[in-house]
Every structure is written in structure tokens, then in C-alpha cells.
Length: 512
Image (cartoon, rainbow, N blue to C red; front, side, top):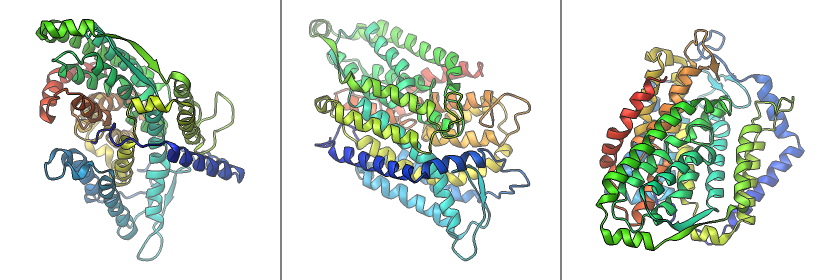
């Protein structure tokens, strides 16, 4: 993972121009009623097909077709850790080569070898048969529709929007780095994570936290707990909080349903804040030298906020766009369904407003760049394509895995989210749960709500178990190290997570 503060662009004009062009193209398509027709097609076709029914009769691809997906996830996990590949992997272009190459292998399989129909779920569900001839263009096109148009585009634009707008807000100052001050920093991050995303909250708060603690020597544990709470566990109350929950929203989960997870959110984050305060108050803070503490108390600056206008209002606009502009749902009890991609167009407009109306000096002070979001875009392009065979296998055969209880989904989703990216892991187990019969239980998007809660909590909470479980984890580690904090190694970090997080997750199991 590259340092997101590195190689900041000299101008935002190319991004502003690109956003303007996309919005003009969307307005032109709307003049020809194309987004409106797409929404009508989506709602007329329906949103859920049982792939195990005789009417659909889908045959999943063989298990070996998930190899490109596994290879890509392995590259994300291993290449940054290997001496021979760590520098090569820092290039977003090289990441794109790997992701796109493995995605092309998956598409080639569907074009040449897959002999059965594929379920299309873009613009409503339909079963697409293989066409005549040695090469089937219909099947790889269907895979691209499912992966890119239905899932990747909304996913990456939301992340881009949150990342760009929060990059225009700066919090600076140097408070006395007392245990209560640090606990308050992390606690505020826990609240913000669900409303501006874990990435946005982490990028907003990590620098003032490090600046506040710049006079202290024992800071490592503070950053580790920041990753636990702000980069992961705080983000489970709204779909914009963490990428896996937004994928669930795109699959039909109600926008406010995740608020029902508040008890688990309160337990885990409250416990982590209490553990941190005890650790810092009674173990870390007393180990600081007297001269360092004196300097910390004397060298202070009050907190200052800049860039709040217009970005706070724009962040509210992001929340409203996600909540209200889902094309599959009528707006506020009316019969009108938002046009296809109107939500994404509004989010791009919010990015443009932030770049045009916001302060360039604030972004420069934040050393804001697009490197981190380009990295996510490059990798997830391949992830969303290569995971399609796994999703199809699980949608048909998921019931055969033997996962039936909430605790099984919680730990299965969580353990894989610890070592793989938690967004695709969530989607895999979401599809698995859809293949089960709810047995009269309350359902949400075709999944029993108690199972959905387990999957959601497992993906969000256990992304904190390793540096690679969630994107912001490595970003925060890199920023901390560039500020002089010696962070634990990959496995050293896991000592913290195993000793602190796993016992808390055992408690969560009894709440499912």
C-alpha cells in the first residue's frame, strides 16, 4: 500500500474537467431518456431470482475458475511483504496490470469454455444463454454488466466521493497528549466512521492525533487502537460506513437497517475505548519521561478546523444521495424511482463542488493526492470481475457448505475478512446466505436478518484483525510511520488483535 500523501498532484483541474465531462454525458443521455428507461427495465424485471429453481436451472462454473480471484487476493496480501516485489507493487499501474490480467482470464473462460446460462442482475434479473459459435460474447458481456455496471461503478464512486470531500477538511492543533484526550480522539472517530466512512474518518483524524502525540515516545498502541476503532469497528451503523455494507445496500439491504447493529457497535467500540484508556493511563503514559511530558504540556496549540465550508454540507449530500437515490426504491413514499446512475451523478457533482468551492490551501496542507483511491480503483476492478465465478458457485451451492447458524457466518466471514479484503468476502457470504431457506424468519434482501447481522458484523469488525483486512489499515500505518512512529510488523500487529479483539468477538457471538 503506497503512502496516500505522496506524489500530490499540482492541480485538481484534470479531475474537475473529467467530472464535468461525465456529468455532461449523463445529462445528454437523460435528454434521450436512457437512464429513465434503464430504471423502468430494472423495476419491471424484478430484483431476485432463485438460482436453484427449476425454471432458472443455472449450472455453476467449476471450482477451478476461482483461481484468478484467489491469486489476486494473494497478490494483495503477499506482494507488499516480499522484498522482491514490494517496490514493484507500489506502482498503481503494476497493480492494474495484475488485476486486469486476472480479470481477462476470467472473461476468457466465459467466452470460450462456459457452456451454461448465466444469471444477469443488471437492469433486473434475466438468464442469459450461451450463444452459437466457438466464442460467446454474450456471457463475458453479462459478467461485465454484473461486476462493473451493477457493483463496481457505484462502489468506487462512493469511495471516491468520501475520500475527495474529506480530503478538503483539515483539523490541526497540538493538545496535551493525555490518556483522556487520546481516548476522545478515537471515540469521535468511532462516531464519524459510520457517517463519513472509515476511510474518511481515518484520513481526517490520524494527522491531528499524531501531531498531538508528537512529544510522546510511546504512541504505537494509540495508532493500533485507532486502526481497530476508526478504520474498522466504528463503521457498521450505515452503509457508507464500510465498503462491505455498501455492497449489501446495492444488493437490496435497506439504508437504515444497519442501525439495528447498534448494540454490537456499542459493546465492541465501548470496550475498546475502555481498554485503551486503561492501557494508556496506567501503563503507557507513566512510562513517558518527565521532560517529554513537560514539553507536551507546554507546547500546545488549540484545535483549528478549516475547510468545513462547503465540505460538511457536501458530506450530508453524500448521505442523502445514498439514502434517497436508489433506482430500485421509490423516493419517500412516492411512486417515482430515481434514474439509473442519478445517485452516482450527484456524488460526482459533489466532488466537483468540493474541488471548485473548497480551499486548495487546505488540500495542500493535508498533502492530499489521489494515489490511494487510484490504488483501490485498480485493484477492485479485477476483484469484482474475478469473484464472479465464486459468487455463482455459492449462489447455487451455498446451501451445501453447512453454514446455517449466525455464529458460523460471523466467524467464517470474519476470518476471511482478516486476510482478504472484507468487501468481496462479505458479498461471497451474502450470496451464500441467499441460497438458504429462511424458514419463516424475517428477511432482508433474501437473507434472514439474524444471518445478515452476523455477516455484516464479521466483515466490518474482523477487518481489524490484520493490516490487510481493510484499506484504511495500511494507509494509517504508512502515515504513522512517515511521522516517526515505529509500528508493529504484520505479525506483531496480529499479536495485538488476537489478544484484544478476539475475546471481544467471542462476546459478540453470544449476542447473535
